[in-house]
Length: 235
Image (cartoon, rainbow, N blue to C red):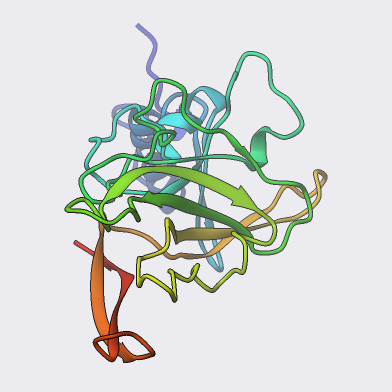
């Protein structure tokens, strides 16, 4: 049976500095292929270590659902190739959002949904916004201020009036019927360079929206109005 060792390091051959390096390099290659799939390459650069993955392994190790517990890394942005067997020019700038919770509810299109949202970021974008639009029950009653549903959305300018939140009613004091949470921003090069930067992942934990009230003086029979507003916290 033939050996896979280099000629210089066959059994009985003297170990030289060169042959020692060959053994180390071959062992490292074997470990990388075992962990990340055949065809993976690990390269040491002056700026750090570069890992090149074969196409079939990218979804697994760049944040796709496979191999990752659903509760890990809530709302993480990750690159997603919709159909690896039929690649398109925009695959490298297509993203999904990992499952997360707002008031114990998943957005209806994170990657736990039956049909997750595929976010195709335009090429040559700067700080392209990915965010959650949360619908709030603003009607007077015991459910006022509770989360009805939420949806992941995206766009170059963010939500209306970004980065400000909608106002509630200055007449009744009711909270706004929508609230927005920024997940992150993505910057892309053109389709030739294919470079993606996520300068900051703003949301990295599950969250909770609270309704808070404060009194303001106004012309009412009681002399004040209880204004209800919304605040967001991570949990």
